[in-house]
Image (cartoon, rainbow, N blue to C red; front, side, top):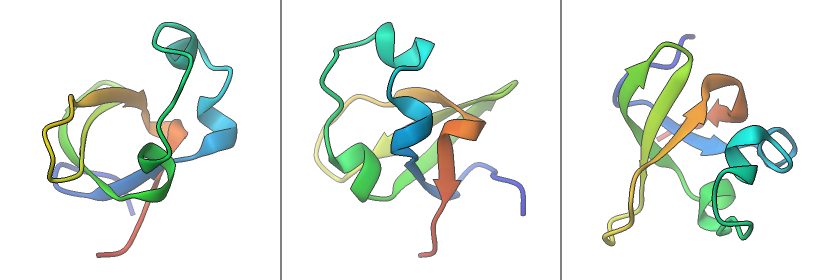
Length: 72
């Protein structure tokens, strides 16, 4: 199943840590990125814009291979 807008995803720690995307940001990656489902709000090429949680946190862009789709 392909990831699309509205899909729920979570980051895969092994794919994200040490990646170019992780190096271009704060070195501390919050646990909610790996443990909580985030909603895909936009897709550009191989990148997904993801909104995590109900509290005001900034959206993040990750490569599609750095996330896994999760159930509802």
